[in-house]
Length: 293
Image (cartoon, rainbow, N blue to C red; front, side):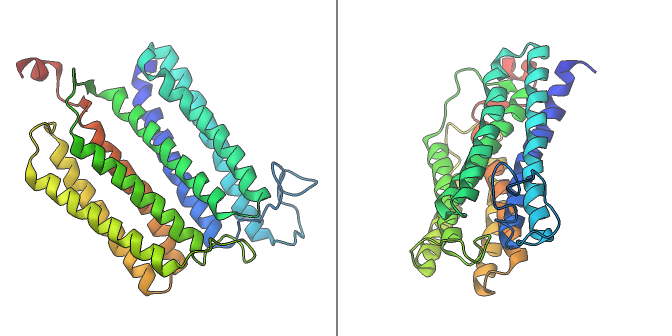
């Protein structure tokens, strides 16, 4: 198989692994395994892997260690992406591909800081937000590997606001997490803010995002690309499901399973939001169709 044909499947694998890292990070947190490996880069002071009889417990140690191992899988996928991009001659994708490797190194450093600061909530939030940035880059790689670039795109100010509001909603969610009960360890510090207050702010932001998305679907903005509204509808569906999960976990006392589902949903929601934005730059229409326009 040629390097060009490998671009899309490797980019798809990279995006899936970046989203899966968020899910496994959530598993570490809700199972209280955040300090299953209490040192970094080693798991214990004398071993890079979990050892028998750890005070933190074997299960917690292996859950945390498994999350660390996924970072290695991501690194090899990112290296493969760079190699395929170079072999295919796609110079336009090189910076995005290299950013994946740089971001994974950044994740490793932030992961170490998170462990060494005993799961400081701001460090944990930074860890997650970097994943969001890497998901956007991996998604851009995937779309650009198989789509046509729109010449002189007219980017709608609406979509800029939509993307920024989505990021704000996600960032507010990290504050709710930082004040909430699932810290990753019973002794981990918590943000000194009232969870009811920050959860209410987060909820109002979500409502605002839903209303903004509905406005975009029905307003039919003049400079929308041909498939922007279709992806806005997909985003709206993801946003509504995510909102229902978030409200349910609040009512039910933040059960672990719903927390994990909400984390996975945040990744999928962000992928949907970024896809909406990319419609202004890339299309899957053929070159002949573009010329007819």
